[in-house]
Length: 405
Image (cartoon, rainbow, N blue to C red):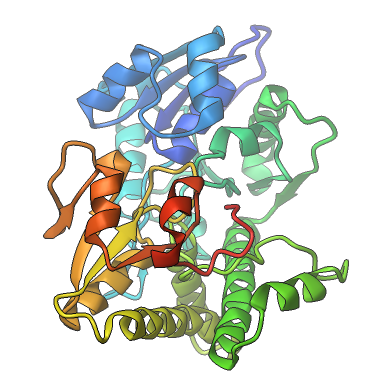
């Protein structure tokens, strides 16, 4: 286990360089020696050339402008062998067949660390089911694993690490010292002062992450259903939302209607939360999962109404991303909408600048000249409205009230 040392820097290896891993690597490289490990050579090359492989303003700026002790490598063996801490930030996608997260990538890293090092403390940052940390500690007969949930927004991951709402580390008596050191490293790298740091049991920390994201999904679902009601009844949804949200107990966060929640976390975390309940009585958690599907069904119906009299109708999809200033469209709600529109005989045309040079995406045509895209589309569907749409706003279908993320 970690021993306090007089040297200023710890050696930290970060497994995975997505939003979570890369933002943590950059944060900690301000004061520690950090090695980022990935399996993709192109990502390693970019990081070593101080180019961010993901779209995140602060990551891009810090890589270009800060003096970071950061190296990226494909050589996991040497990275883990030298490490005091190994941060595990690999994907844990939801497996609908098993009704649980696929944690195989996490366990693959654990096995490699145990093979390479007899002292590195592993910090799981990937989202995992409640009870998973205890499970893998028992499975691998090691007490060198702790859990620390992350609370990051995509495209703002480093900003959220620099200004954390809280830092939580799940540990037990044998790992409390390592947990304190790790949390201190996060605090040292942050810009924000007086950060709330909480230490708790492994399962409690795991539950915090899932309940927090499920609550955020509930907020999205609530305002989407408010908007569905207003649109169906012919009411002004924005006026209703503004009136509701002036109540300080409610507030304005996560109140901007969308086509449904998507992205890296909310779809899988809500389903995992539902699965974790098992036989425990609940209604709300299941409803939070189901409301997303109901919302997409409503959006599809509204779009089809707009093209029902058009022969060979073309629906233009303006951006596959869920949020403005993002390059991630994994699990975006619009992709499910596209599938159902296509089943209804609608031709789909995509405008997505991050697919520059591509002619197709998942079998759909891509047109990255905006004027050509707009001219060919009978209706333009936009989850988030941007200024470029102004000249053709008569064609645009969006539920974006406030023109923000």
